[in-house]
Figure (tube, rainbow, N blue to C red):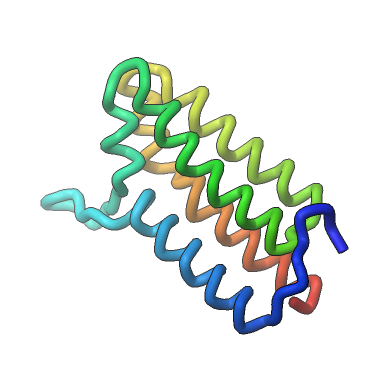
Length: 124
């Protein structure tokens, strides 16, 4: 059992994973960009707030990583998720280019994919 893993059944895990998927979608892809086929999320809009936007959205994104750890995701995957988030937050602090990177990188959706794939590999 991983350090954060609890005794939960697979239906509880599935429900938790579905909630994480909805949160990641809301953060990274819930809004259509007019006149394009591109989608952004609330995370991209929060990141536009100078000084605190990227830090605030990073804290929200950290909740996805924490929940993945609690669900039993392996340590190397947690590290990879943290690196995705770190890249998203650090590059996101660069005016304009960082915001564009944040809109395209979609760290939350990537991290939920990592959680889902790791839990499948573990047979959970």
